[in-house]
Length: 251
Image 1 (cartoon, rainbow, N blue to C red):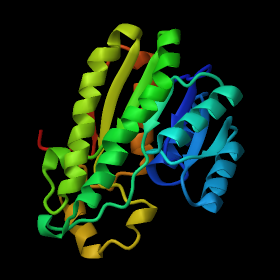
Image 2 (image 1 turned 45 degrees about the vertical axis):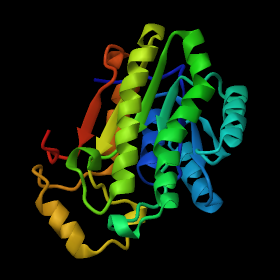
Image 3 (image 1 turned 90 degrees about the vertical axis):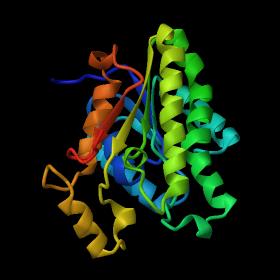
Image 4 (image 1 turned 180 degrees about the horizontal axis):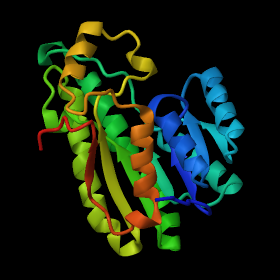
C-alpha cells in the first residue's frame, strides 16, 4: 500500500531524535508538511532537520516544551502561519524514564510522567482540534508503551501515566469520531535509540531473548504504524491500541 499524505500538515512532538525523528521523516516522505519539534538540544535538532530537508521533505523546526500550554499555543500558531492547519498530531515527546521501586519515588516523579503522557496530549489536542473539526478530518496518534500491557515492575510512574494516556485515547476516539477525527495509540516495545546507549547489556540481552520475532524493533517499525494511522485508509480505525513489539505483548 502506497500512502499519500500530500495536503496534510503534521506536528510530531519530540521529533529531533529517536522514534520521533524517524516518524517525522516517514510522514514527510509520504507527502505531509511536518513540524520537527524539540525542547532543549538545538544542535541535535538542527541536524535532524537538515536530514529531513535533505530527504526532500517540507516542514519547519520549532522549539517548544510539549507540556507547556503557552509554548504549545505559540508553536501551533507558527505552524499554521507557515504550513497550514495541523490535521495530523503525533504525541511522542518523553522525559527520562527512571526505573525504581515505589519507596524511591516522590510525587514529582509521578507528576512529570503525568505531564508528558496525560497533560501533553490534552494541551496539544485542545490547541489543534478546532482546525481538525473545521476540516472534518484529523488524526491524533499517541505513542504509548507496551509497559501498560506488561505491568512492568519498578516502573510504576511511567506505567500509570501510559495507562492514563491509553484511556484518554479511547475516550477521545469516541468523542471526536463524529467530526471525522480518529484517535489511536501505538504501544512500542523496547526499541533501542539514543537514550538507551548506557542501558546495561545484560538487561538488553534478557529483553531480546523474550521477543518472539527474534529481532530488535527499529524506529521505522513505529514510523510505519504512524503513517498507517495517519492515512485515508485508516479512516474507520479509531480508539485502537497497536502493539509494535514483535509479538511480545501477551494480550
